[in-house]
Image 1 (cartoon, one colour):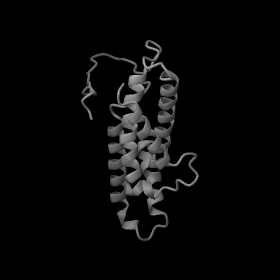
Image 2 (image 1 turned 30 degrees about the vertical axis):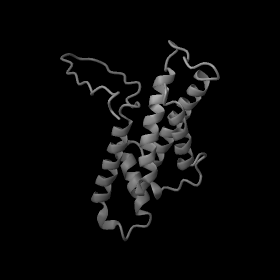
Image 3 (image 1 turned 120 degrees about the horizontal axis):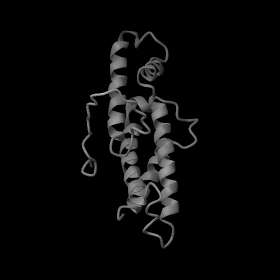
Image 4 (image 1 turned 90 degrees about the horizontal axis):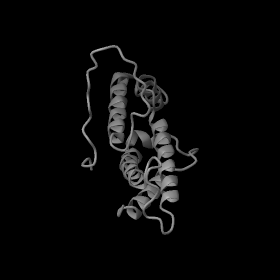
Amino acid sequence: MRKHCSPPLELTQEEDTISINHSGVNGCNLAHMWHFLQQELRAVQQEVSQWRDSMPDWDHHCQVIMRSCSGISFEEFYHFLKIIAERRLLLLAKELGPGDMEGSAGRGLGPQQAAFDVSRIAEVLASVVAHPDFRRVDTSVFSLQPGELLQQLEEVVAATASL
């Protein structure tokens, strides 16, 4: 699974600098982000466990608290995955049209990277969908149900396995 990912690189800058981060999450570390969010929620749940039986919507409140600490809830994480997945699926549809297995090299993200990202999103989304706390999220208003997105991703992973 991680054989295509490089280990993280840590540098110590010995002088004043300005850092502008564009995107800290990609196919290689998406699972780490999901693992972090699960740890954050467990910590919140442990911290407020004494109110579990007396607080209405305790699970929802835990998500709100987690969001205030980490900047994202499980619901928002799903939407994040969905947006990235839709972009990668669109890229693959454009790049790998009939008779065009090479794609358009040199124009940004290529079909191999998009396929890699889709496979990693599918792995993480499978874990998200199975997570008991995510199952408590009201997904009825989602434009695309998590299970449907996972099925689409798995089909594309199977179709692009040869890239």
